[in-house]
Length: 320
Length: 320
Image (cartoon, rainbow over all chains, first blue to last red; front, side, top):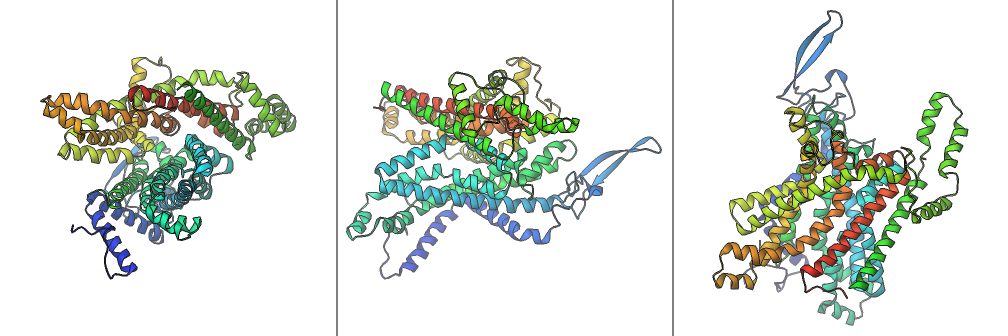
């Protein structure tokens, strides 16, 4: 067997060495999946733009009604103007401008600046809410599996109830009642979205619980807390990474949908908010509805591609 | 089996009751009151706000303490009285009775569309594994999963209704529900709602088919000289479809509360999603609670029905 894997022992190597080998092994496997590499590249690209882009762009909230509905560079738009003095209609052709390369919306705000501000919001909500949800999911899943008995019963019944709850309706309800703010959106998604993760991690931890190394550390007198945090959680971490990557798209879409129906944070520009405005100008300025949707779609697609690749790469049992 | 059904049924009722309570509390504890809307109108007309407010609160029992309102609501509900809608001044049941058919029709048609196309493409994809067709379908299904439904709806409206004028840009409620004209205007909403489901079913069907294609009974069937279409149709398909039943049934929950909700809003279909949406914004809690309750209960009952159906489809499974 020439394959390098986590199951292969390397004599005389330090643990740090072994860990870096492991990372390289996973990276080699992930690299074979071209689609997930493309996804990863796009995610890094969007993250850099979201982080540093706002420094270079115009203020996304500044409106200029003289330049309203400017088409993207390379496109034109016809506008009928009624002149009150001569009582005549004249047709004017509006061309894309270099200072607004992706056009402007009906209030004359720069689309590029708004899209970049939206990237920041989408990633922020996606990462924070998923992080929170995965944290609870892992904790509940592992504790449930390890302690078993009535604790397992109570936690899993609670998970069942949470799973039946109409999640999106709950989100709309809470955000409507307690006011639309990013913090509330992140908290609601983060505190309700852990159910799927908890179940998957529980079943993984259940199979780990009976393995010899857990029995061995218990025999050596390790406490429950120590076993959970030093042995169980590190061993489910690759599953956690995959679940997290595949959960982010749903969270990003939920935030966009919420903003789209008018419940977004009014203090920030998100892709959903732009779409909300764009749906009313489909006939005059199509780009306002098209551009944020493409950003949203590509981001979600990238996370799905990456998650799919990671699932294969982090599972040594599958061949890539 | 009978005991199992009874147990699950009671369990469903308890969950539905829990969801009712949470929804009720969330809406009634919030800072805004159902009376706000009326008062805005009245203040504009220069009438005495306080007396009208008291009259309305007394009419709907909103002046009582919260727990009393809750018990009153529960008591009425147990007697089959769903209360009155505060924003439309109609009995809640009348409101639901005149709108449910639109949601039902949309969800039914979208699910049928997704099952036929999704399962069909999944089967072909598995049979033609690792061909160009398989890769194309695989990438397309990723796209289908990643495309935000509400944005897809907007784009379909923009292209087919605004640009080409093939469909109306609004939902015309003057047609009878099952008339051809009404079914025709449901084409775009059904595609919008069905695409995400469809893409999921392609992937599940494909992997489930591939699992079964490797089984020994398939080799046996081939070895005894059965034509390939019978091997696939009789031996593989009948086994591969089983897990799909569960996935499709459990998916209904997210279709009812996520996709259908947004699709109705985008296309202006007057189904229960839109009704509950406007009810949330009007703080019309009897309507919101009723629709949430009915929706959750339906999903729970469908889940139970799936489990029961499963014992008939797969005799190896027994719940005792």
